[in-house]
Length: 131
Image: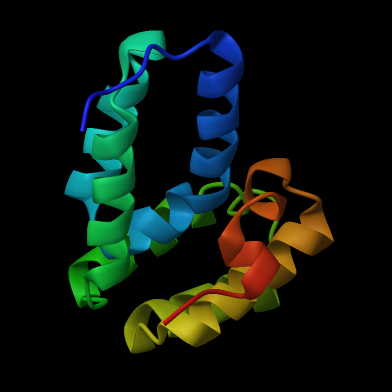
């Protein structure tokens, strides 16, 4: 399949998809997350088929402890200076349990409470995560 030349509008639409999916992807694989970020550096020359393949690969992956922990630490960075003592305690408890559904519910709750736009626009907040 031959790639087409993208316009800035096309790239913008792909960036919107990425903004929605990136935290979910991060929860599955740091490697895939980094590969997609690199794709976007190519701008209008990026491969749409490679983007789609990487998204599909992430969706097929099972959650593992390492990636869940990395994702949760990353998104916690948005809240660690705003969170109250109960939320900080809950974060610590969730880091020990690493239950992705409970983590995503907590992240979605905090995103709404603190109006964090990057997370509010993500599938993690919109769907409270996917398993």
